[in-house]
Length: 152
Image (cartoon, rainbow, N blue to C red; front, side):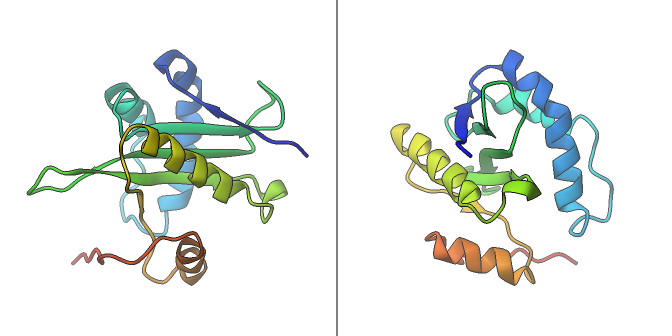
């Protein structure tokens, strides 16, 4: 199956994806959040950040308009004291039917390339502390553990 990666640059094209991003965000964060995913969070993010240099929204599809096989949303994590904006994978999803074929890696590599074209050399990702499979995958792709987030 041939897969095409499409970058979403404008809000009008991104708007129909917001509900899907919210659903995937809620699903992926359910084990890490005590409170429910805020409905409309994806659209609010896209409205505020889609034009930012650290923001990339990619859709993987078998043919234009055929529906998504994968999505990757990168946006800035803002360091509270220094205000440094670090591009961070906020959401990465690959349809179960096409997993283990390199699509997630292709999405991350394309995001990395687009960020590099914008002069941004870093890409971070959030990983649950006990998600050994995701940690291992990230390390195979060249990510390194930099710091831990702790909550009380």
